[in-house]
Structure formats: structure tokens, C-alpha cells
View (tube, each protein chain N blue to C red):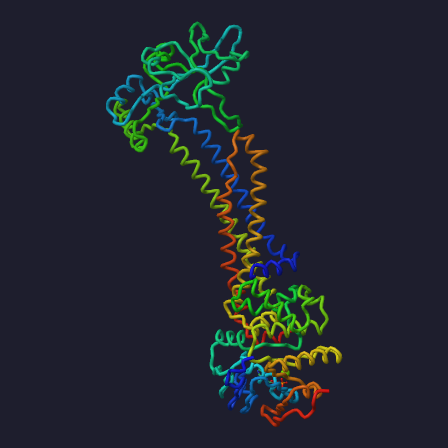
Length: 398
Length: 237
Ligand SMILES: Nc1ncnc2c1ncn2[C@@H]1O[C@H](COP(=O)(O)OP(=O)(O)O)[C@@H](O)[C@H]1O
Ligand SMILES: [Mg+2]
């Protein structure tokens, strides 16, 4: 009954109702569409980073320091670290080199890199298998190639495993092909195009003891940050350098944290925009409710004369405010989801190769919170005022 | 209707009313004493400013007397709080206004049923009872017309139906024919006669002598005092 009457009132003056809720529509629409975009950007970044293994980190010397030569990690350090730092499962060199790769008459310049097990990138396998522990133990001449290299070298398609490809005079047997990663301008491909066991790489390409960087995997992922620090300290000991020499580490969790920091800053800005638009729109709702109550003073008097209690008048106008703000907020939500979805499908997908599903539950929660807030803050006073009207005065009002 | 109930409908004892506007005190009623028995049909007359509306507001439980005792249908209502007065208006009183005071954009049936909504009665029962009362005032076939689709007389009938729906102890009407032409006024007065014949207690303010003579008793006010209280001499033609 209250709802029925509220709907009747709002429909009685459609233009006024629309003008009142337009602020809510714009405010909620803006917040929801930015929410959708933030959600899909964050989703696409975590999707991209998903190709990195969780349990690993990479350490490399800071490149801007004077004694770079002295800071460089040595191949021989890896075993020492593995044997002395707890929680290290594997320690492998990170290195690579540009090579002209050939299969039959097909040629291409690709990044040939050292890989280990588990691999650098956990991209799914399209054909064959990954590099195995046996391959590494025996420094076998095998390779897992990327989808890009596969397309160039094997344009006819089909399963290439067992075929031999050449890097100069080195021959590698293809044992696997990594699947195509998602296509998008912002996407990074992790791991080289032609991955070979790191032991094979060391034998064929590393001259001397110095390596570019090292990759470590851990047994217990929960203590990965402590393990990182322990490894860096151990490297300083081994290289006999002080704390002034910097080593950088890169792992998925801390990188994701950095990204999340950026998104929480965006979220705060959006929340501020939302708050300001809510304030303005809420004042509009309060204003129109006060006007409506003044116009309906005689009606309120009549209702009281025939027996409506204060609480019942309060409920009527409170519900009218609730309807007004809910309609505005939910239209805003629909428009926000529409704009967000549209920008996702024409723009974000080109940028990242990925769109997150629309966050309906989150949008509903935000919208309901906005509507509840506007009603509670801006609908209460007009409703109280209507409820407090003196019936005699109200009946006399013309 | 309520025939077994021994109480008079209305008992007023030494009722005074003084309005306070700032430091200024305006005494309006100076001590009203009167009883209205169940089933009586009373007209209140008096010049403008004599206190008719003030008295009706007190009888209608829209306002409290400054002093004195008011017993409505056996219950002392002189000093009730706002919500308790609302409850009394809902259960024991029916109001008919000069300007009908129907809800616009709301059909006759829903207008009539409104007090039942405030009494917490469910929708189906509200509809059923509203139709019964609309039938009583001869508007069953207009149940789904909105006020702007009804003539003034029909609107006032809807308002009377709304006043009757809670089976009130007293029906109060302040100038019920003030906005109606002579012909329509006669129809409304005929309806009041019918309700009176059916046993309703009716209290009506009017300044039209002819209308007042339709009642069985006329109370005359002057400067906040009852100056005459007598049976109406004229019989209905
Ligand atoms: N709320 C009020 N405050 C002050 N004076 C009032 C108020 N209401 C009525 N009065 C005064 O009381 C007197 C009687 O008013 P009212 O009962 O409306 O008379 P009637 O209905 O007989 O014309 C008038 O002089 C009026 O000015
Ligand atoms: Mg008056």
C-alpha cells in the first residue's frame, strides 16, 4: 500500500521525478562504470600475471651501480644458495640470447632462453610436454617453443614434436609447444620463444661464471618474502659486498600488490566523486520531498484526521524517498553497467585481450548502499516533518 | 447499532479552550456543557468566530481542551497523547469535510478503504468492506472512478462512505454542503436523514438555517458559549 501510493505519486509528476533522480543516475552511473572498468583492468592484469608461477622469484643486481661487475651473480653461487638458504627448491640462471632459428626453409629470429622445471611461465601446453627434470639433469638438446615460434617455423601446422630445429649449428628436438597467450596490447609474454634446459644453455652459451640474474623456486610460498631477503643477504656474503650494493627481486605477489595499490587509489577518487554526487543528488531528493509535503499538507491533515498515526505518515514519506532514490540509483546502475560493458567490449579487450565478467553482485551492493544512504540521510527529515504536522493546521492549509 | 451500549455518545463538561499565540492568550470556549445521546442528529450553528470549528476540533479529537472533561463513547479522551487521539479518531470518529478531502488519483473504493489500511486490515477485507459502504451511499457502480471523474455530490458521498467505514460512534460534518449547489445539497441531506434513520449519531456544523432544520436538535453558539439548545421544530417535508 505504501509502495503503491509512492509509485502513484512519482508517476503523477514524471518530469519532476526524472529531474530529481537525474543526479543520482549520473552519480551512480559514473561510479558503477568506473567500477566495471577497474574490475576488468585488474582482472586482465592478474590474468596476464597468472602466466607467472606463484612459487618463484627472480633476483638481479641493480644495474645503475658502479661496481656492477662485482655485484654480478655467479653460476657457482646458485648451488651455494640452494644448499644454505632454507625453503629454496631450485636455483637456476635466468639468461637468454637472440638467435636465428631455422626449421627446414623457415627462418625466424627468436629469443632463446634457459628454462627450468617448473617452467618460467605456466602457460598451458598445446602440443607435447614441458622440459623435464631428466632433460635438465642430462642437459639434453630439447626445446619447448612458443606459439609465435611455432607459427613461424611450422606454418603448415600439425604436431611438431620430434622435429629438429636449428640455432646456428646447434640442433634441438622440439618436445613441446606452449599455447597461444591472450592477445592484447598490454599483454606481456613471459619466457622466451625457444626454451631449452638451463643446463644445456649453460653448456652452450654461458662463457665464464657471471650470469644476468637468477630464478629461485620455494617449497613454502607463505614465507616467500623472507626467503627473498635471505637469498639477497646470502648473495651479498658470497659476493663480499656491503648493503650499499642493491639487488632487486621480482615476484608475482609483490607486483600484484603494487598494481592493487594503484587501483585502490583510483577507488578512493571514484568514492570521492560518488560522495559529492550523492550529496548534491541527496539534497535534490530532500528538496523535492519537502516541496511535495508542502503541496500535500491538506492531504496529510486528512490522513491524520481519519486516524493515521505519526509512524504511518512517517512510513509513507520515508518509503516515497526510498522509492525515489532507489529508482534513481538502479537506473544509474543499469546505465553504468551498460557503459562499462560497452567500453570493455570495444576498448579494454583490445588493450588486454581480456574482459572480466560484469561485477553484478558488487554493482548491486554499491547501488543498494547508495540508495539506503540517500534515503536515510535525506529522506528522514522530510518524513519527520510530515509526521509532525499538526492536523488542524494541515487541514486548514490551502 | 450500539443500542446495547448504555453510554451517551458525547459528554462535555466545562470545556474551555484558550489559544496561546506568543504572550497573547485568546480565550475561545468559555465552558461548554452538553450531552449527545446515541442516535441523535445535532446541528451546531453560530456566527463566524463563535467557536464552532474549535468545538468540532475538540469533539473530533484533533485538539485537546484547555480544561474540562470530554467523554466519548464511555471513554475519557480529555488528556490523551497524539497517538492515542489518532487511535480514537480511527476507531470512533468519522469526518466529513466541506471540501471532501479525497485523495486525488485514487479511486473511490481505495479512498473509502483508507481508514481500514491505517487500522491494519488486509487488502481483501478492505475492498469488501469499502464496496459494502459504497453500496450504502449509492455509489457501488462508481467504485473505480477517481475523484476528478465524479461530481461534487458524488465526491461528498465517497467522503461520507469513508467516514462510515470504521462504524464510528459519531459522524462529524463541518459544513458538509458548503461547496455544493442546492439540488446536490438536498441529496446529501437526504443521505444524512437515511443514516440518522439507520441509527447513526451525527454532529453537523452549518450556518444554513434550512439545512440545520433537517437535524433533530440545534445547538447555538455565541462567543464560546452555548446560548440555545433546543429540538428542531420543523419536521422534514
Ligand atoms: N489556532 C488559533 N490560534 C489563535 N486563535 C484562534 C485559533 N483558531 C481559532 N482562533 C480564534 O478562535 C475564534 C473562534 O474560531 P473558530 O472556532 O474557527 O470559529 P468558527 O468556526 O465559529 O468561525 C476566532 O476568533 C479565531 O480567530
Ligand atoms: Mg469555522
